[in-house]
Amino acid sequence: MKKTSYSPGINYKPNLNRLCSLEDWNNDEFKKIINELQNPTYKTYIQKKDWKTSDKKIPSMRKPGLIHRKDWEWTLGIIAMKRFNKLNDKCTAIGIGSGREEVLFYLANHLKHVYATDIYDRKKWDNVAQSDFPDNPKKYAPFPYKEDALTVLRMDGTKLEFPSETFDIAFSFSSIEHFGGKDHSGSLKSMKEIERVLKPGGIAVIATEYIINDKDHPEFFNKKTIYSDLIDKLDSLKLVEPLDLRITTKTLDTVLDFTEVVKRDRDHSFRKTHPHILLRVRSLLVTSVMLVLQKK
Ligand SMILES: C[S@@+](CC[C@H](N)C(=O)[O-])C[C@H]1O[C@@H](n2cnc3c(N)ncnc32)[C@H](O)[C@@H]1O
View 1 (cartoon, rainbow, N blue to C red):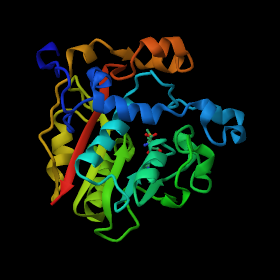
View 2 (view 1 turned 45 degrees about the vertical axis):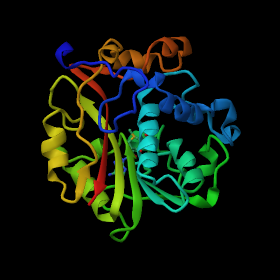
View 3 (view 1 turned 90 degrees about the horizontal axis):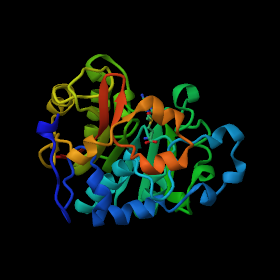
View 4 (view 1 turned 90 degrees about the vertical axis):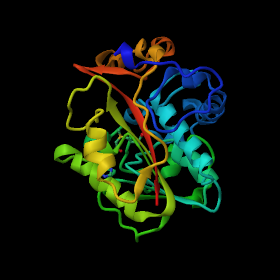
């Protein structure tokens, strides 16, 4: 593994298509956006008093200073939207498998309109995709947002109920890998739908889960399947830059056992000293990969 590791140096302009790395939390462009996203805390959620006790177990809620790859996915996604001049009030976006992710409210404040889609059935995803979210997103809003710029819809990510060439941006953060099927066919179906609903020149900002030690998995991708099951099967959607699948040396040193992560989810001092970037899930070493593609 050490053979493929590297260090990005300092003050780098972040590449878009690559794995999550610990160093990003020291990068100025990253720091600025992460601070904006982490500003809300449990105490500042708009309607937290309405939450039922069971809803308070919200694993993705992070306090400022905690290092978590979910913030990386959102932050690099925002950087990509900015870099392609899409983060403005002329652009419309669709989120796929969006759950109740906090970044939706940030995007609603910066874009013309955001359509968040997800199946929103509580069976498996009850902490991230509450079934009342489509009817009352405000209940989960971490900060005030343009309420008329966010529409939440129950929709299968493999069958997007929109006409072709509708959106400037499609985004999805760690969701497509869970869409089922053999050889990641659910992920591919969703990417084909994304390809269809994007306008020419539109961008897809897709974070998914990636195995760095080459094992096979029905959901997570590895260095072969990310190409063979996904990227190589798209037609007009092309990576905006080469995909760098190296992991930094410092990130390798952060590996955390997934059972420990679950056990210590509410332990703030543990989370403060243990960046949540690279997880050992049984024999797999898993992190996030970002794919930014543009429709030709
Ligand atoms: C790991 S969660 C990520 C949620 C959200 N993107 C976030 O970052 O918090 C995976 C999401 O995929 C959604 N999902 C699963 N199958 C789906 C499908 N076929 N179509 C749309 N969403 C789906 C789940 O409901 C869940 O919200």
